Image (cartoon, rainbow, N blue to C red; front, side, top):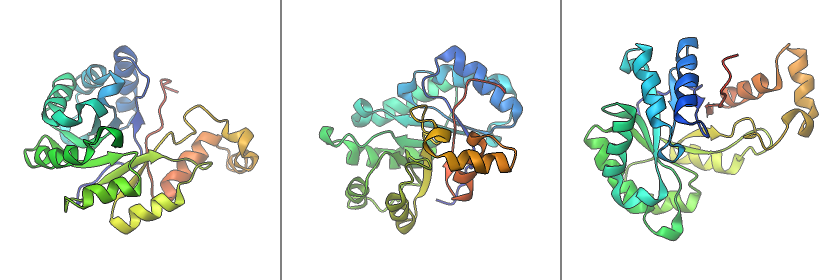
Length: 227
């Protein structure tokens, strides 16, 4: 949408406030500038504390949070609560976390996000886990193209059709679960990855992160370990 985002960030899923504060502090100290959180992660306070204590100018950081399913009818209240927990005046990216089509509220939620962006509470707005039919539904009522669709994506689940759809619509693709979200062992499932990583003196995780970047994907692997 004309704004920029660091291609490599830190995910914070399943971190509590204390762990998020420590991990985000470490990440910021080591050079990360892109942090991804969400209301449902229940760690926005910890993320915000790490941001404040870092001393890094706000305009050097890129912070994402997300609108949870049950909050779709009241997006302004939801983002206001997120900003209070984060201790920020705005986020750089606000996402509709899931379409949750059974609720029938995601299209109206998108229209609310347009207003939040216009009011300066979010610099960019996007979606997460939206399939083409969900993108069609919001396109039918809005000329605003989501800046990003954040979807599960890794070398064993490459989502080529969905990525092509994003490219056609002008939507950037962001990968969640970029290392298989702990559910798969990449080296065992795809032994060639281990061979290639060994050839370059890298770990399989390093190789996979590099794959995302070279594929033009925004990626935010999660770790609680400073090393």
